[in-house]
Amino acid sequence: MSSSGDLVPQGQDVLNVLVEARRLASQLLHVHGDDMPGVLELISRIESEERAVQNAMEAGLPRPICCSTAHYLKCVGNVACESEGLLALFVRVESGVGSVWADIVCHGGQKYVSCIAISPNSLHLSWIGQHYGKRGVLEKALNMASIRLLNPSADIVFFFERGVPRLAKVALLKIGVMVMGKEVEGPQALPAFDFSTSASCSEFHLDKEGDCKKIMPTKIVPTKWNRKLLDIPALISLVSDVCCIQQELLRAALSEVKRGVMAVRSSPFVIEQLEDELKGNSARLQTLQLVENKLVFCAESAISHLNSLVQTFGSTSEMKRFQEIERNVIVLEKDGLLQPWPHINVIPDQVLFNKPSSSCILALPQSGKIKKQTKLSMATAELENAAPITSNIGFIHALRSSRILIQSHIIPARALSAGLFNEMK
Image (cartoon, rainbow, N blue to C red; front, top):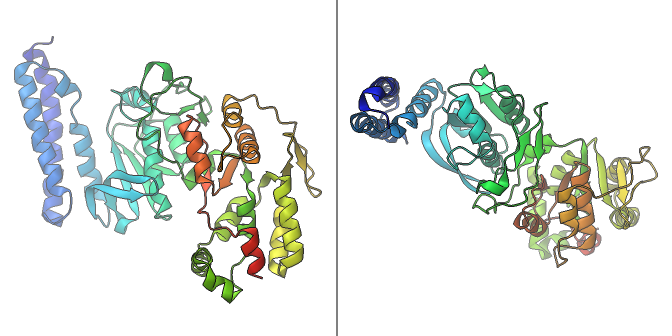
């Protein structure tokens, strides 16, 4: 154990950082007053940390000094002082997967900041989930990004007080997180985490090009986060320009839900769709935005059935939208082959489910939400690095309970059934 004398210089450095943090907190208090949520908490945390460091110096305990949150508290104070439209510090924010903590909320509630004050080496360990068993930084970023489910225009910012390695910065930018802080030297690759030796559930690593890759753990201890549903539109940026869509959302992409007054009155689901349509936030618009200029995998039965519906009941605009989608459709047949719809020129190779996660998807037991065709679609999406677009939340939950992470875009199950599609005409 180190003597108290050996710890004095380190402890004094930490106390100097806390003095600066206290100055910044006092400045916040002077400018915003004690009515600003979180300012008094920041001051309280600084005072508590000062007492802990002083006691550690007297007792010769290195850990409270080495693991001090002084740099983090200083970072929060510094960023808060420079932020425009500051609303609060240390806020629990509701998101699409529960609630998440934001260190700073500013710009009128449109910017959510998380302060990271660990060293680059510690950041490397934290990234792969080995930093005192805490959640990895990328996993924290995914959690923060879920704020956009309820506030699509929100900016998610990670401020790195002591620098950020380039590969970490690239991966965060790819999931739509703004990165602030100087870029520093880091490892050439962030290795995959060994799930067999830890209870952490970080499910990503970076290759040498800085791309985010999924890894399939052989053994994993479930955590609260691992059981949550990832439904983050920003994840679409991680995949190629290919998507996989199911029949109910193909119908949603076509139907405008603006006619059939009696049908609207008779169905609360259609009423909700109509309200979303009028607000410009319908399942149709969301789906069209996701499939635009992309190759689209879908089941042969889905595109054939939709074709007959559109030809029989479709309006001029609905027929036009169907033709635009149809040009990029790749039909997924029952035997696991990808074949082109008549207008497509590219014929992908035969599907060989040789990825562990694809095989696990096919091995799921069938049930009401887990049908053979759905498994085939999802396995193909995983194999081809495509983004599944679905309203089948039950299937995604089943995947996650089986330790399979699918980067999906989930649209609420408001698509018209075949019966309602007919009735609305």
